[in-house]
Length: 216
Image 1: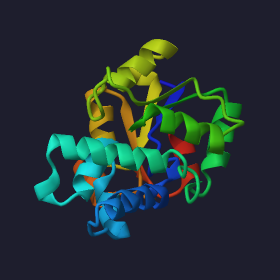
Image 2: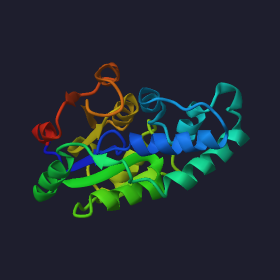
Image 3: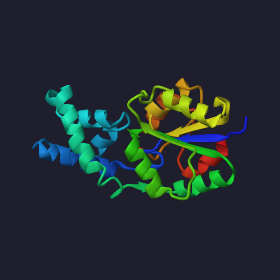
């Protein structure tokens, strides 16, 4: 069936956010006189929400709930004010979204980033794109790979799952799509490896944004 809706992951798919995430984490660690991490480490830390990112950045012996929660607050206080300093869309993404929109295909975002941050980034970088739904992490909804967020988007838009396409850069994204019984497109330009996408049974993998047009 023809695709009527494309659901995008945010970090590592639409936007390269790792610079601002890493800087906020480094700030949180510096407040505690703890060692910082390199780019590759932060790429492996992201994908399961801010709480898990903060937890993974902390030394193992400090990963108790109360300490992680306090560290998360310090992270968020810095990050929300610097969320778009180093972040930018991946090559071809704006053009892809404009083409999909012009073709009448509906667009949505399903991210594990906290809701306020997700909304702020979408407003900042895609002001001319009309997204039907923009969902980040919300307390009442399970994080991906639980399919709840995709199911909610399908319900709100009235689009059948066989008419939807899910696009993401990680194994978590591919697991989410499969759990929701939605076709998946893995993108190779994000934070995770092509091997991870293959291991998690991406229906197809693309190397450039415009290649996604083949599947709609």
